[in-house]
Length: 241
Ligand code: PML
Ligand code: MG
Ligand code: MG
Ligand code: MG
Image (cartoon, protein in one colour):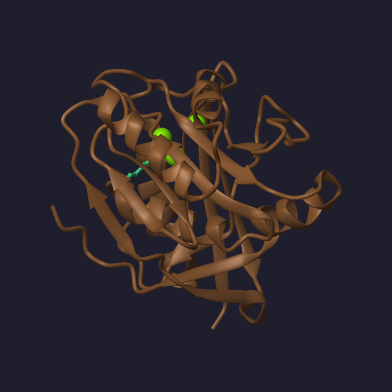
């Protein structure tokens, strides 16, 4: 059965507004394209002046199937407590400079992709620092209709791919959507840990930081997997509230 990668990204004055992608069969191309375009046109970050829709056939033999990371949810009463939780979890991952890492989120808002950070030297490893690294070519097995954004399910797909990437020891995500305040920290060892509040409602500040550990000359292995490896994530659980 022929499979296609379908990707949408939208921006305004070169600032990223939204992006989403699917891996689908041919008969879904028309309906899913329309649904992704509608998402691009109606986003809380604003109206785009540029939308890119890309459709490519993919070879099913090149797909890697990964089980979804186990999910855990932590409920906190404020963004400040949520940020403190992140620091505790980073320490469990033997990352002791969490405060400095969290301060880098002030640079991620307009980026289309994530920051790729050497956690020990705090060097940024993205070849293009304005764009960042976009983890791509991924979807959930039997994924739902892309009409409404399901933050959780889409983020779990991405986090599962990222956690399985060579030299990546973890990821931190604060949503860049002004009306979405839940974020997460994820790693192969700890799973996908959702934190109910990481910023205040209405704040657009957010983004992703991929945490790299190792010698910088191996970064191409990591970027190659994030940008090229086709991945389908199995067993996405329903979100328990
Ligand atoms: C985004 O805006 O794409 C990030 C969404 C984070 C999802 C966190 C969750 O609800 O599990
Ligand atoms: Mg997004
Ligand atoms: Mg977003
Ligand atoms: Mg962003």
